[in-house]
Image (tube, helix red, strand yellow):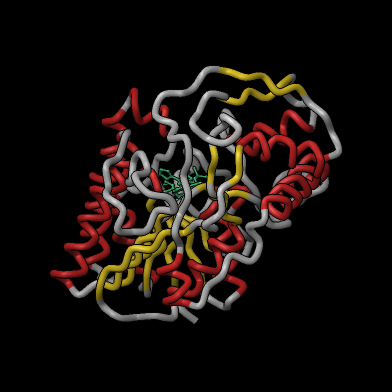
Length: 330
Ligand SMILES: NC(=O)c1ccc[n+]([C@@H]2O[C@H](COP(=O)([O-])OP(=O)(O)OC[C@H]3O[C@@H](n4cnc5c(N)ncnc54)[C@H](O)[C@@H]3O)[C@@H](O)[C@H]2O)c1
């Protein structure tokens, strides 16, 4: 059993990964300021510290008490449109607070670090699918702040002998029975589609029908959070110094139009779909080449078929409506 600190474990991906680490027998402490996460998403078996990444003294005290074997760092600001108009907040949280956090960990002797980065570090694809060697050229402060932090981590691995894993996720999607994706306010494509199917919003808006793709809509690579969680758990077993970057995607692209029709068929509900104009900074197509991680860990995406993703997300949505997101009868 290891003692693991999970930052951002009250959020979408962090809560699902934390539940997986607990299932595997680890002792998990979650650090989260609930700025975009939810207290009821924290798995019941985890210890919870309601701290901000910026609370350096309190984090140092927490690390000294718990003597962590390593850290999964999911916490961060992640809304691309917000990062375009408010870049300072992103550099402050994702980079500046992150570096102070690394220094705190270093002084406490923690050397194992797994970081949630993003496909946004690549910018517009020059080749598809995109391997880790694809040039990096972020189009927004979100991607830039994540890339800068990746580079800091590479130096920590080199200078201090840390064991660093950097995951560049493509579009995380789907749900487990207990945990799913939600934001306040909601701006993410799958939760919005499910809200339209549930009749909570009058229509769903698809941005752009004039992209250079076969059907004119954006195409994206969705990866089921269960596949992400398995990948995160797998790297824990490998404890050696160095810094490795892995793309995590399914390697398959789906059109957003196909996403809409899958939500309609899985939910059995029809809803209106409006066509809006393109949003700035949305690449026409994004697709991971996840071969490096597949080879290194014999990992395969098992649940990332579009229908499985949507079915799981829809079931979670229905059960959250019935029982509340924490699974407690409303
Ligand atoms: N969801 C995706 O498709 C996706 C894709 C690429 C990368 N990522 C990255 O994965 C990570 C998790 O994403 P998510 O979708 O679960 O987001 P999320 O917003 O659901 O989770 C982030 C969590 O971090 C917490 N947090 C934010 N700032 C904090 C701070 N200063 N101190 C303490 N806690 C803080 C939030 O309260 C939240 O619980 C993020 O770093 C994001 O950039 C996500």
